[in-house]
Length: 106
Image 1 (spheres, helix red, strand yellow):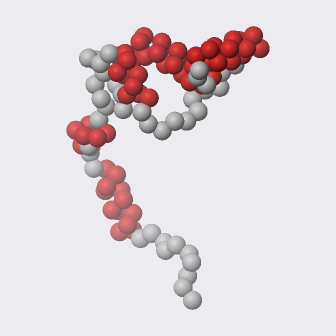
Image 2 (cartoon, rainbow, N blue to C red):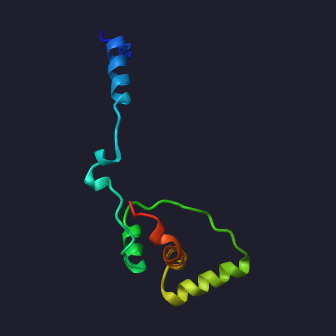
C-alpha cells in the first residue's frame, strides 16, 4: 500500500529553494503584460474605462441614513440603473478626475 504522507524535504531541495529566492530581480524582469499602463496622457473617460475592466469584488460597505437610501433608490430608478451602478458611476468618475492621473492602471 502506497503512503499518503508527503515526503520530507531534503537539504538539496531546501538549498534549491533558497538559491532561487536569493536571485536578484529588477523591475525590468517583469513581463510586458504585467507592466502598468501609463495614465499621464489618458483622459479621465479613457482611464475610467480601463480601470473598470477586470474581476469585480466588494470594495466597501456604504453607510447612510434612511433619507439617503430613499434618495439613492429614487435616483437609480430615474436613471434606469441599479443602485450599485449609480454609486459606481458618480463615485469613480469623481475619484478618477481628481486622483486618476497620479496612479498607473495595472
